[in-house]
Image (cartoon, rainbow, N blue to C red):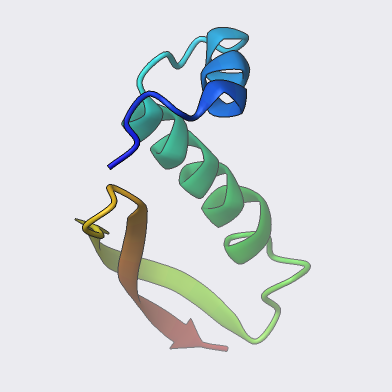
Length: 74
């Protein structure tokens, strides 16, 4: 594994308040969720009720999320 070879990511994270990559990932995921999925103009046909998510890491350490969303049909 190349734990110290991500210099560009270290530079990006050093410029943010989120020095921890996991926090940075969840901030970005939350931003996507709030600005796109929960935006009434973009989701006219349904209302976001609840969601469940699970974070997993691949062998090389890359994070990804599985998510289930409950929607109320308008």
